[in-house]
Length: 251
Image 1 (tube, rainbow, N blue to C red):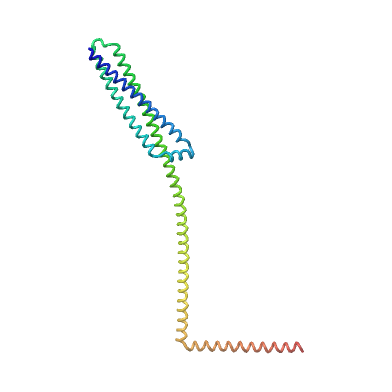
Image 2 (cartoon, one colour):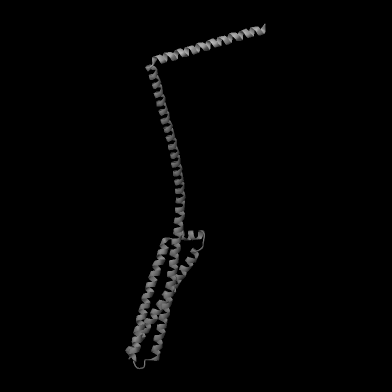
């Protein structure tokens, strides 16, 4: 009976020791959640504070905090699991010590340890959920800030690209206008060459006709000579008459 009593006391000591360790771990774990909340509130200030805070916080600090969170959560889960095993052993002891009428003090002690375990488990799950939600919000805000920065950078690139495209379009339009002017000049040149060929052909035909009919050529030359002679005679008569009229007028 004394051995059974010592076994119960050993279980109670193990339970109290685990409960104290869990309590200390939960306090530190809760402080870690408070630090996450404070960091989130400070980082949510609009303006330059967000950028300066995010730029001044080293990447290793974030990694260290995440490692600390994972480590503490794993340690608390292991302690809670051990405490659950001790409580199960205590429950088995109360059932084996007196099947017909277990001690009320033992049952009360067992129920108190179970309540403590339940409270610790609830507090741990609540704190873990809060920290996880804060981390997810921080990751989302960081992603949004990165998207904004990327958008600003891409906006500057887009403006430069638009200027380059406009300049390229302007150059293409200028080249198109020059090509049109060259085409008009080439068409004018072709028309002038065509007219030159046509006039040359007409001249050649007239010379050919004149060579084929020399009498017509001679007749035309005589007609032109007579026309010149008549013109000279008429001019002489008019000049003579004018001189006579002038002489008569002065006398």
